[in-house]
Image 1: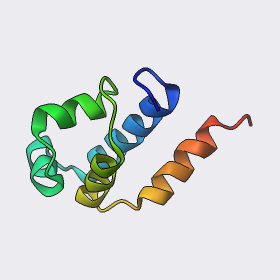
Image 2: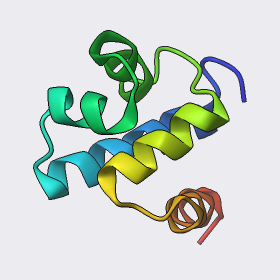
Image 3: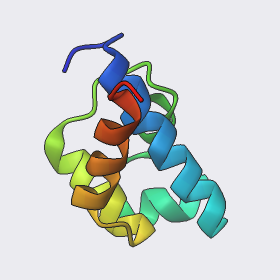
Image 4: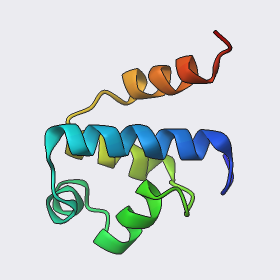
Length: 80
C-alpha cells in the first residue's frame, strides 16, 4: 500500500473511528503504541504510509482486533 492509496485512507479512517469511539487521546495512544504523536497524527490522517508493525501497535493501543478492522475496510470497498 502506497501513500495516497485508497486502502491506506480507509485503514486510517477506521482507526480514527475506533480512536474516537474509545475516546483515546492522541498522547495516550502514542504512549500505548510506542508511535510518536506526530507520526501517529500523520498515519491517522492518511498522509504517511503506515508500516505493518505500527498498524499492529496502534490496534493494540486501541484494543482493536487488526483482522476485524481490515475485514471492515475490505467490506466497505466491495460493491454493494
